[in-house]
Amino acid sequence: MSFNTISVVGLGYIGLPTAAMFASRKKKVIGVDVNQHAVDTINRGEIHIVEPELDMIVHAAVTEGYLKATTTPEPADAFLIAVPTPFKNNGSEIPEPDLTYIHKASEAIAPVLKKGDLVILESTSPVGATEQMVGWLAAARPDLSFPQQAGENADVNIAHCPERVLPGHVVRELVENDRVIGGMTANCSARAVELYKTFVQGECVITNARTAEMAKLTENSCRDVQIAFANELSIICDKLDIDVWELISLANRHPRINILQPGPGVGGHCIAVDPWFIVSKTPEEAKIIHTARKVNDAKPSWVIDKVKLALADFLQANTSKTAQDVTVACYGLSFKPNIDDLRESPALDITSELAKFHSGSVFAVEPNVSSLPSHAKNIELVTLERAQQEADIHVLLVDHKEFKNIAPIFDYLVDTKGVWK
Image (cartoon, rainbow, N blue to C red; front, side):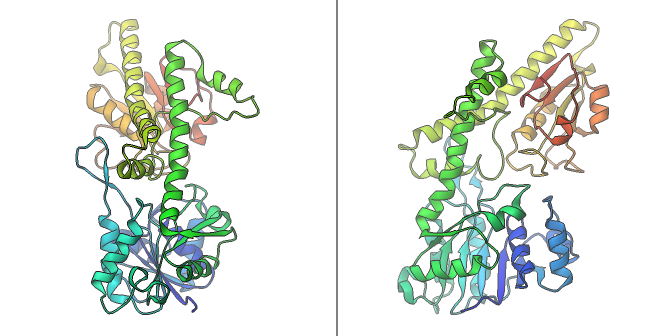
């Protein structure tokens, strides 16, 4: 059964590029999002996120009539759900995954489902989320059968296929990367492979839905553990008066060692989040994963303490000035270099916290955004040149390419990325 019309629910950093790739292959694509601004922007042939090459693909797809966006789902042959999976604010040490967006997306598409449709959950999810989604769909559409009840004979096929792309390289990696296809039955997997092969050149590797869910969580948890080692090493080296960047460079000369670079913490919608999905399901067993999360979550506080020490040193050397006279400049707010994504960003958290306690000015230099989020209070977005000229204390948080192209010498510098050291 062919896929003439494809619906992508959630038009964010993953959903929109995915919708655009299907549309670029001359498939009719209906993008669905609750954000009216995003819908209107896309329907003008423009994009509301920063992702290289995506603007041209979306413009062409909309102009040629293959892609449109709407706030209400319409009938299609395949539905891809790519909505956020945040955490509930339950005050617990181990946060609980919040599947509200998946639940709402399921309820939204349920009325337009028909026999023969394929539903794929792409949202990064705790193990068992795909089965839970099927339960919501089945409750909303008792007239249709689903794999949990009917197996291979189900009216609607279900699969979990996690995205595995790097922001800033999404367009290329959507095409080239292998895909993990976790169908609830063999037929579900086969149909999902058929759909993705519309544009995927990488291998589509078949497994079951639970293993597919766990695969994405495992990849990012492994990365989180590796970063935690580097971040912990940077704290140890600071205490022992050792240059951690030189140390890592020397250690990595060993043919079987590849230590990652430390930073101000871990952010983004994947590495800072996905390990908690494992820990929340198996808190007694996930000891290393849990510890890595705590190490990385604590790093921003360590950076803030280093800025406070720099502030104290400055005031001691400039006795005629008070804290109110001191300007602190933070370089980079996104969770990784050369993108505009501020989700779970330790750099933004650090800058916001500095603005709370520091009575002087706090500058932010972020070349990838034109405005700050509403919760970023008492922070002034300035140019790189102004920050260099006017700030007294400089805090490098993200190694954007714009920062790598200069080599300033500052008397009071906290460099979390080793770029200006």
